[in-house]
Structures are given as structure tokens and as C-alpha cells.
Image 1 (tube, helix red, strand yellow):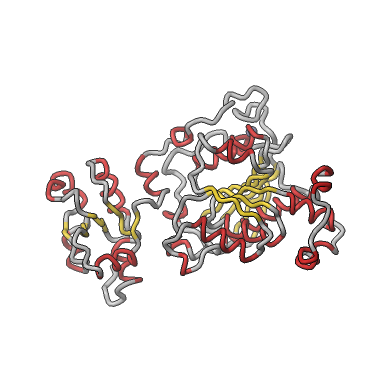
Image 2 (tube, protein in one colour; image 1 turned 180 degrees about the vertical axis):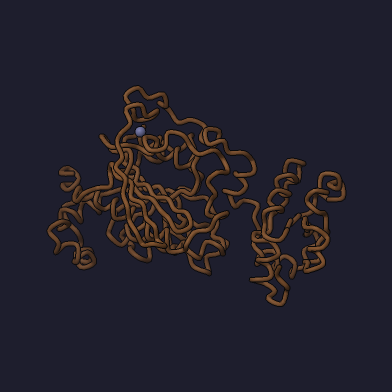
Length: 388
Ligand SMILES: [Zn+2]
């Protein structure tokens, strides 16, 4: 970092004041703070993990923060994604994140990448940074991030969360193991539920994300004992931290002695992702009860509400939509008009997601799934509606 320090030998007086609690610690000091200022960190995702990562790295004075995200802020994100506030619902996460980061520390240069990270763009984006922080929520992107980090020689600060449990480690350093040394193959699709299906304690990404941010800062400073070669396991319910020793696997397909993966591959295929899981992972096509309410109130003539529950359920409560039970949909699909904006709902969102997939296969392009089903509607829009 010597050459770097020559380029920018000082902090401004404002920066000295801002970082004074760092500067008086010998482990950071002026030298460390300048390293932070010169550091370029890429955060994959501005969601649950990305929130504390981006906010704390900005506060700590990391000079350049890249953020990759293509998603829109949704109400269900607010329970854990503290980069975004209620007023941000419906905005691009990237814009909301950049604003929050700049408000915390205007000295940070935020670089926005409004895209899904793909095998086509990952190497190019990652090459511009020193360290990558993985805040993704799906296996395909996680393997992509890992392989891209190995191929570009950038450390991968890993974190993952589910319900009450989390993991963290530092992968893909020069002599350390990578994610594939630990998990050479992804689990069969559908075996490990996503947070959207299984839930996640809102504070857990805070806990794990702060660990990732801590590891990132230590890597930049070059001090302390890194999580390289260790997998930290967090159980928030029991509040227990355990760790597993990890070794670099000489047979690892990407970082081993005779790698078979020497370029980025098709990760969706590798993870066996089918249309169904893709729809569950990406929120594209989802509609919140609030959005539906707005459209109904506006008297949108092209709006068509399709209820795919059973008749007895319809009797309990309904939104006045057309009832076609999911199992009858294939034989009654002809009753639907492709030119309408179709919002499909069931009780909780599972059957309607299947219906949306089916309708898309049948050439319906303007079709949405009501997130959380009629139960979410009852919770958030019409508290008088009976729930069952
Ligand atoms: Zn490996």
C-alpha cells in the first residue's frame, strides 16, 4: 500500500475529526485510515446482509463502495434491510442504498451497478475492486461470486442467513479455501428453502453482516486474525457462536491443484434452477397487497383479479375476483384475456405462484402474484376480513 499512501498522504481536517476514534487506536491510526480511504469494496446486493455491510463500511471511511443490485424496495424488505426506509418502498434499492450511504458519509464514492451479477459481467465488475462482500440470497449467485473471486484473486467475504442461523467466512484468499472447497456441489434445488419461504429473523442479517463488515475492515488494515480457513456458525436463538476449521481442498474444482472450472459457467444450470424457483427468487412479477389496493381504488379497467383457491375458501372471504381453482386452470385458461393485467391470488401465495408460472408458459405476459395471498390482504389492507 506504500505507493497508494504517497498518492494521498493526508486526511482533511474534517476527516481527521470524523475518524478520530480510529486514529487514536494504534491498530488503525493514520496509516490504517488511509488504507481504508484507498480501499475499494464491492458489495453484492443491497438487501439484508448488504445493509449493515454498506452502512458500516461507509461509516468506517472505506473510500470506494461498489453496490450491485437490480431489485426494488418492497414492504417485506423493511423488516431487515435497514438501508431502506418506508418511504423508499417502490424505489430502486440501489438509489435508496446510495442515498443512505452518502448521508452517513459523503466522503465515500458510491459506484452503482444496476444489474444482476452474471457470468458475463462478474469478472469485469469485480476486477475494479479489492475485496468482494457476498450479500446474495441464492446459490447460483453465491457460486458465481466465489468462482469470480477465485479467478480474479479477490477475497470473498461470505455470509449467509436462514431463519435464526447464519454463517460467515473469508474465502478465495491466496492460500485459503474457497466456498467450493466447503461445498463442491450445490444442494438439489428446492431442498434448502429460501428466506422468502422459510423466513428469517430480521436482526440476523444485521448480526452476520456486521461480521462481514468487520472481516472486510480487518483485511483492509491487514491486522487481526481473519476468518480465512474458519467457518463461523451463528445460532441467534441460542446465542451461540461455533466455528469449523476449513482447509483448502487440493481437489477443489476451481481453486484446487488441477482446476476444471477455469472460466465462469452457467450457474443457474449448475444449481439446477427451474422456472419455479427462479420465480420464487426474483420478485419480478410480484405484487404487494398495497399495490393491488392502489390499482383497485384507481378503477383500473385492465385489472383482472384471478382467485385460484377452492370454492369453500372463496366463501370465507374474497376480493371479488374470478374464481378458477388451480387444478381447473389448464382446462379453463381460455376464459382469461391476455390483454388484461392479471393479478393472481390464493390464501398465502404458493398456489398463485404456480398459477403465474403456468400462465407465463401459456404466453400471458402481464401477470402478477399477490405476495402473501388474501391473508396478507387481510393483515395489511382490510383488518375486518376474516383470516383462516
Ligand atoms: Zn476451493
